[in-house]
Length: 397
Image (cartoon, rainbow, N blue to C red; front, side):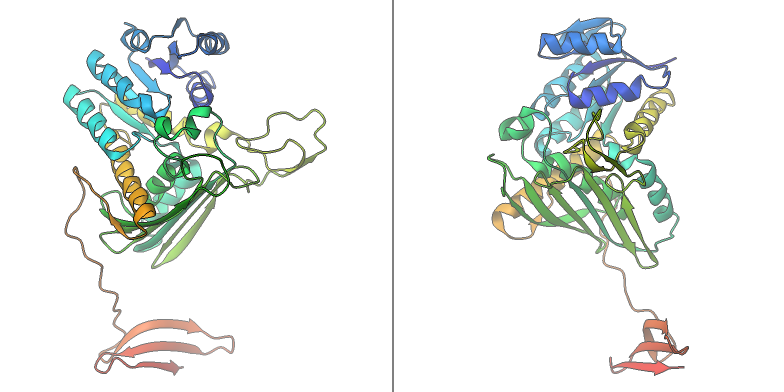
């Protein structure tokens, strides 16, 4: 039996979600659509054959046939929607970020757990095929101990007006895009590894807004690993999604959108939509073969709806959304203070008391190994550290 869904929000992301949920003869159906704008409701209902329409949020959520509520609303409306899902005991899946800050996210997490309802955090970029394959390799040990994970998301800016309003959105590009990047790095490092402090630079460089339009941050984890993100609403050239992860035994580079293996040149004649955040429909373009798939939406909904049917937790829950919000709160504090700021986690369900691993690698009884390499002239060079004196030496074999 398929899921019967109430979609809250008829805008850009709600339509992306609908395309995935009802794409390719899916058994899951949107049966109720809510938006604050009547014209948006009617257009969405016509496009996706939705039978129940309303401009009253509670009517969509309490509809007797609805069993899952999908929140695709501005950030400032998430908590009210979640509370109504708790009231009517409806499974809830919420777009990112979960809250405008960790306090909001914590209230939502505690509310759904007290109500005993299914909850999932729709962080689509940790469901992309490339990311999932990379994560499997990392978790299998192919990269050894993870030292550094970096994620970048930059584009010319979001589509809807509310994103640009700091009160409604809760922040600027860091909250909008950094939530993706934080969870990507956190997944590679280990979601049970505690984030401890953040150093962040953020500024408003181009856009006439109160919030930041560019930010860079370092997130330090308890085991010594470093997460890094760069986010921007000022990047020209489309949507740039790139991840890097480095370990003691290897490295992975991911490019998810601008370099897809699909290059096209056109004068623009007859051209229309090319790809999300594309700035032009002429010249050299980089289309994406299947955006819904490449951005992880199909895999995300499959996991979440399967989790409901299998009575298990999905890969991403409101708890994950809360941790992400707490990390971003620290980033905002650091951007103001210009100092490392602690991550304040009132709720932590991972490992505790970890320390940075010992990095000394024994070579023989007298030495630690720093590096071994084959030279261009066929010899093996060893860089060693003497255990007794600490002196660095090299040996050529």
